[in-house]
Amino acid sequence: MIETAERAQAIDQEDAASHDRLWRCYTLLGKRPNVTVAAPEATGDALTALAGTLANADVAKPARLEAAAKLLAGLEAFMAIAGDVYPPRLPTLRSLILTLRPAYHAEEEPEVKGALASVLAALHAASVSIYKVDEVARSYATTQFRAQPGTEAANYAARERIIYPTTARHREMILKTGNLGP
Image (cartoon, rainbow, N blue to C red; front, side):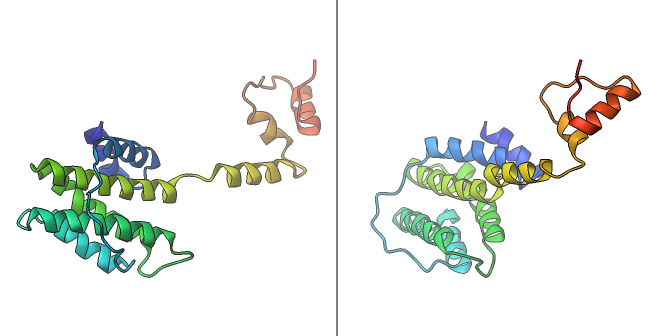
């Protein structure tokens, strides 16, 4: 499942469905580090530095687990910042995923691998929140569009089940009323 979703992301990094799948998979595989840390500065540079420490197999295990715990706390604070941030969130999230994904696959230490999975789960959850379509906004926009005069034919065609007009009289009836009567 992870390999399939990662292949989908190699084609389209903005695929919300693959981010959702990866979020769910890594959540099941992840184990948050049992380390108490203060939240780091909520900036892209600070998170990138922590990801570098976590991904580096030459760093000692306790330092990597501490970096994972700080990264999780920092990511939560980073996503909680209201409004726009500089640098933008999305390139930072993509960079962190691309840094930590190969580290996860190469990791042999179970505790560090669990921490990596936990961080990747948080990154994919954040990506889902960015890429997921806002259904309420879409529904509102559709309702507003369909309420305008002149959209009767489009409303008719958007129905779940339609009968296509076969005569000029059918066409005119759909354009006037939005329905095809008997």
